[in-house]
Amino acid sequence: MKRVVYISGSIVVSVVLIALFVYLTEGKHIPVLQPTGEVAEAQRNLFIFTASLSALVVLPVFALLAYISITFREGNTKAAYRPDWSGNTLLEAIWWGIPILIIGVLAVVTYQTSHSLDPYKELEGGKPVEVQVVALRWKWLFIYPEHHVATLNQAYIPNERPVRFTMTANAPMSAFWIPSLGSQVYAMNGMHSQLNLKGKQAGTYTGYTTNINGEGYAKMTFETNVVDQAKFNAWVDEARQSPNTMDRSMYEQLSQPKSITDKQTYRLADDQLFAIISSTFSHSHSSNGGH
Image 1 (tube, rainbow, N blue to C red):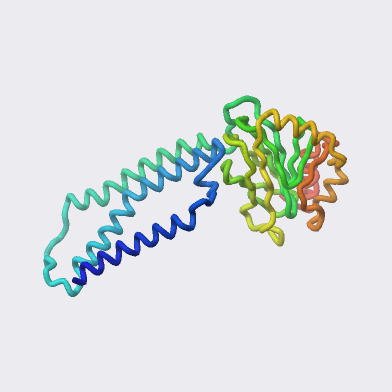
Image 2: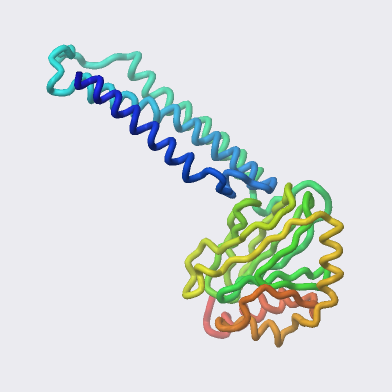
């Protein structure tokens, strides 16, 4: 009777947990599991593959744990008692061989995807759009040198076209991440990092910093608008008519922690602003004895 209770209880608990998961996730958008970018989609598939492969070990282990606990419990007098049993070659081969095979497969997959999903690797689909990103306290500045515009806390990128983000920071180290599109890359003072992404579905997606970097960390988000090429071109034309100008003076204002934090659009006065920002920090850091 107790055995029936144990088994029934386990089934009920499992069903309740599954039902609770379905209830909590119903209608929810989970970017890493519902990607809209080429890179994020490949990462999602990799996650599912590796999780499924790992389940080949994890699930049998937990099943055996339940079986052994129930079968060889103190109260079960029917369990076979074999104190002189020293081992089983077949079982040893199974529980050593399968994990070794799985680790071997994961090693090959890790090697391949480390190259195929390299954030510096350019994506197919035409000439990439150049977007320069500066992590400030606690906001994001996007510079489009080829289009002569800039934005604050919002980015526009054309759908189905590669985008090359080049990043630096004039603030504590930040981590640039758009979960729906893929890959997290750090933005650091005096250094450049790069990230290549491509959207596959028009929409508005939230970007974050995932590196705790101070007082405004929790609100350091930005809006990523993936639009078709025609709408992107129209946005560029409109942005070029903005009354706001992005020059050294405006940048110095934005670099202050308590300055503007709302979404803004600017005409870009100097296409070399990103290089100036990087070199200014590097020279300042060197003059202070940095390496």
